[in-house]
Image (tube, rainbow, N blue to C red; front, side, top):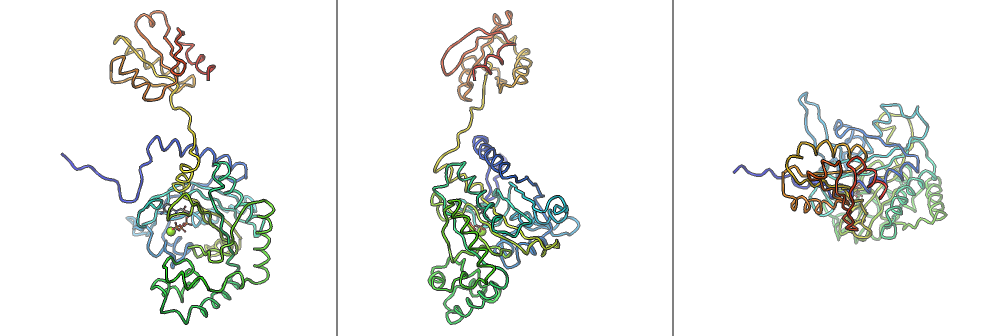
Length: 421
Ligand code: ATP
Ligand code: MG
């Protein structure tokens, strides 16, 4: 026997029953996005490696160790997208979206790829939902995009199981001041830090705050706070964001140690976490990235965005308030009498085009087996068609829920069922 081919480690098959949950979520997402006037964008799944090296940052975990990078036949280095902010910004610049409107509000959903150690809530192919608002530097834009994700949580009925953590990393002047304050604090204890953190001391000391190593966490606890290093305009921006969140009664927690793993953030950064999840508790992360458009060759345009892991979002939804999905099948046609086999495809085709979801047996099974199949599929109705019925142009229509059975003309079946819904 040939070996069974197994799927690659860390990726998932999303099977039909699950896809129905995803689609229920996607319907809610589409409604929320339309309500906030965000337009969907679908950039490619792979880009030139250079885009991520420049856009995400060479020093990040993503670029330094998680990317799926390969050469195409022309020797060009390509990478499966590990995130989509860089791709959206590349697309924004390349398609001159700035000319379309001064503020571009975009959302996306699709698979991302990162070579990480697979575990619950952490996969090598996973899906992200994301939103980016490109064009406005003002706090009201920060608040709108945070409120956008909060609105989605509310629609899903899970907002109470989720915590919003927020911080500001300020503008580049504030970050420079903080980097030096942080280095001064860490310098005397450098040898006690983990190797990863020691390596980051020169290149990117802010990332040390992100360390999960217990020893590092002890040291970090008493580190100076970035909040105390914000210059006047950065502090004012942050205060305004918080004041507006208060006004909108969006609960948040100021997390002085929050830094996000990507290099491009400025000012407001935030994360939504859920205690319904285990170690991988972040369901959404985002922040302002005022320099990225310029750094990728566009004009000096500020932006802010977030990305959320759909698998993790669904884990929370399943734990708190599972999405209900509609029954799949309206009608199953049960045929007795083998002479009718040639008639049935045309009959169900007509019901289908009248708007019903219908199925019928193609294995030439017994009536009993057909009834069982109808049941298994959760059909709302069965239509029983025998030689007698066919000669009169009718079926016996049985409502599975009420058990009621009536004789209905074949061409009236769709009408009767639709009226009954
Ligand atoms: P984490 O701290 O879990 O590694 P991250 O900071 O790398 O997250 P982002 O790059 O901000 O995550 O991505 C945004 C969201 O995408 C995360 O909050 C999470 O919900 C989801 N996500 C990230 N990596 C994975 C993964 N490997 N598998 C599943 N979901 C993921
Ligand atoms: Mg990560």
